[in-house]
Structures are given as structure tokens and as C-alpha cells.
Image (tube, rainbow, N blue to C red; front, side):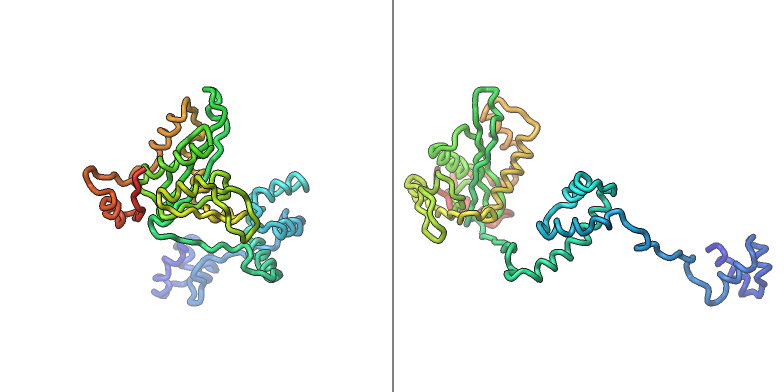
Length: 312
């Protein structure tokens, strides 16, 4: 590259030998890099890609078979199994690179042989503000066993439109606690959503029925919903994606509020959630203002809670 600085000498009729003596290189090198058809970049050696055998090449058939059985299998799991079952000595990085290369190919193969190509796909649904909330229980095990509370449950309600969460902690998951948690959630959000999605919990469903048959609701749950003016939406059996918003919130709240901490009471756990919760999402209700007017005023704001007010 430095030789190109001496091109002006060549254009001034200097010889290759003179330029070589000036820059301290052989005249043949000067001629190679200063002639008209000289390369514009230094020479590059041939690529060695594909010329050296990979350690994982001997086990690619095994990896492909595992991916055909479960195409979502993680590379870390595959590497762990290769090491323990086959004595694989390659690195995890090499395994991950091969899995990233093989997975799309396996997906195409499975799709070509699948009679129902829409199997496994999930249609994402959206709701208007205030139209729906999702409810779920979380099992917090014996987090307060040291103070004599044998079992703790977390109640979660998440607004489907804005993903705003509410969580409270109770020591019982019976009907009384279930309805009281709803009232606390309505107070927290400042209103009642149009419908609430549940799984087939015994506090909502009176008994289980066959697929395609209307689910009989628990009488007290039906009366509670009628009083507050919302519709109970019970998911079909084995439909976990139907209320994925609240199920995801159960894990998020557990990780951010409870993980690595100790508590002495249920009130302390509620206070920890209140401290963590994104307070900017909870719009304050003004005093001496009709609640319906207040909620309508807030409905066009950032999170757009179009939820109807019903005093708890």
C-alpha cells in the first residue's frame, strides 16, 4: 500500500529500479503494484472454509434426528446431550452454529411432510382498550411459612390492551378471596373491564364438560359478574395461549417482586408489588368528578383505558 504513494515518480518517468531504491523494496515489487492493471487491494489467500472437518460432523445425523422430534430444541440442550451421551468434545459455540444452520432446513422438511401446515401456528389477537382483562392464580408456595402461613397465592389481573398488571397476595384461593381480589383489582384500575378471561378454575366453572358443550358457571361467580357488569369468558380446555398476557405477568411479577427477597406478611408482599408496579400506568382519579367522566377523559391518553366504572 505504501508503494502507491510513489506513483507520481512513475508518472514523472522514473524507472522501477529508481523507485525501488527510493522506497527500499525490490524493483519487481514496484512494478507489480504500480503498473496500470495492478490489484487495488493486497492479495488474499484462498478461504479455508469447508476444507477442514468439523468435530460435530460425525454427529450431525443425531442432531438432525433430535430436531425432527422437536424442532424447538435449544442448542444448549443439544450440546449438553452430545457431551453426556456421545462424549462430544466440541464447543457450545460450534453446536449453536450448526443448529442455527440446520433448524431452518428441518422446518422446511417437516412442513413439506405435514398434511396440516397450519398446525402449531398461533393467531395473535388484539382488543380495544377496556374490552378485556385476564385473570390467573400463581402458587408462591411457602414463602411465608416462617411466620405461620403455610401457603401463599398470588392473584393476577392484566388488562389485555395495555398489559397493565395488578397483583395481590392471599393465603387462601377460595371464593371469598377470589371475589375480594377482583374488587381490589377494580379499585386499582378505577373501573371494570367488559369481559374477563379465565381458565377452567373451580372458582368459576361449576363442573367440567365435554368439548363443544357450554360450560356451567359457578352460581356465585355468575352473580358476581352480573353485579359488576362484565362477561365471563372461559377458555377451552388445553388452550394456554388464550390468556398468555396474564400468564406472562405471573412470571414477570414473581421475578421482579419476590425473587431473592424475604417477607414477613402478606401486606409486605402487596407493598412490594405497589412499589415495583409502573405507577405511570395508573391514572389518578380526580376528586369531586363523576367517575364516568374521569374515565372517559383518560380513555384517549397513552394507555387508553376504556373501562366502564363500577364502584366496588
